[in-house]
Amino acid sequence: MAGSNALLPFTAMSAMIYFLGYFDTAKEAQRVPSQLEHLQSALLNLEPTPKEPLEASPHDHSIAMVQTHSAQREVEVLHDQILAWLDSEAEIDDAKRLKPSDIMVMVPDMETFAPHIHAVFGRFANQDPRHLPYSVADTTPRTEPIVQALDMLLQLPQLRITRVEWQSLFEVDA
Image (cartoon, rainbow, N blue to C red; front, side, top):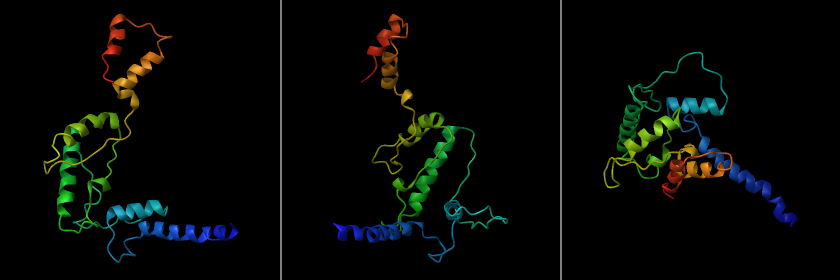
């Protein structure tokens, strides 16, 4: 038993070395870092804000800020941009190619954006080249009808509900 425990630090060290490979910088890869890589490196290494603004390559689209007239249009622009990114990488071999599962989008208020995300990303059939697989996280369970019905049932001893509200509980799809 003592012999196998002696190997644990070496196993942990080899796992750590493998893990650190994910954080190789663009300098180590001998290429010019993108603006996103600059930001990621600064956050990872707790670097102070640079005194001089970074020079951006005209071909660097790693960070994009878009202002539109509505949340619906924002999501439509996002969908088109993701399709353009995926299309621009069509010639790259499969191991290095950008995949939809590599993309994460964050929004300030998911309750506002969720219906627009479903409307835009869910409008295309799986066979359509514009189809992108997606999922929406960070939705509050209270927005689900079944959860609302369960919540109402749990509060029944304290609530006074009408006959119409009582009947509506039986209309919730299970």
